[in-house]
Length: 403
View 1 (cartoon, rainbow, N blue to C red):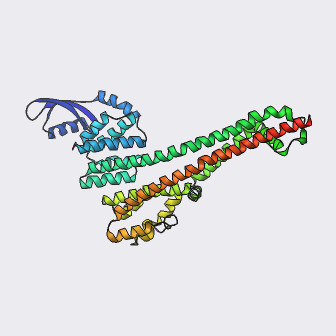
View 2: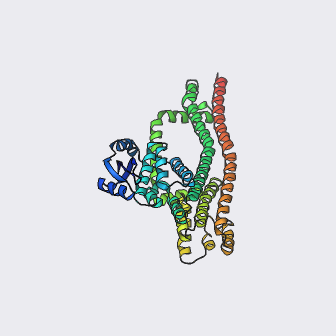
């Protein structure tokens, strides 16, 4: 569609001007007549098209922050009972960057063409997710789009908060591990060789620990290019293997079996899964569809494979609680709680409470994991550094004895 600038006479006889979107100039004229406006002049908005060109060039995948911005602002505008097309036009003017502006302009064009918001957003499912689109469709069908947008905003903020918590929690241990490895490399590559001239005259008379440290230092200095190439090749091979379906399944399964980290991953994944199920059921989405969408929120391949048979079981008439007796979920009390919820008709509330419980448990387990990992890295680093220092001192003392 093209935006046309027009000048005309309104039904009350007063002159008016503005813009209208249509497929052609004739279609624009007919649309204006249908609105009670007698067009006097209609021409394509070249200036507006030139202004929109940078936005079109900025189109691309939306970030989570940009999706949150769109959802939050749309929720505010719809809460004020603003028509959808006007809300999108206003949001396009206040977009945070060209990518969001292009996205909103695309949605606005689809809406002005007669599509619902759900249909207008459908081409962007890769950016928004199935859960987002299904809730938008439910909100439009129930006439409570502003409430759905508010709910989606809260969910996106909760997901971001959880993700940021995990990233910030793991940041310090990762930095500590990198510093520890670099410290050992610097000791072995730059510090230990300074004692080589002192120890060369000793030969085999040096203590075994000193000889071992010197050999490791010589190996690192002489083959560092080959070591880096080997590590890079190993990393690429493992990345390629982990990208295959079988490799991803085994890698994710091994991650879930780790003592503390596996529990963190399981709890946080189940928190998002149950929150999605509970929210969708609250909004009247059929159970089978909600289960399919819930599986899409699981990023761990092993958990997805564990939960996928649940859809077919429920579709065949089986009980939801029986389907939850899986490898990773069956040992918890979740199946029993869901069975009680099925009998009492409070399934959505129970699922949401389970989501809160798994998230809280995941945060507590993360705290325990960090309590163990951080001092463990420091202790291991201290042991290696102490071994190197003691080995060098032993060699120096041996030289003194020889003298």
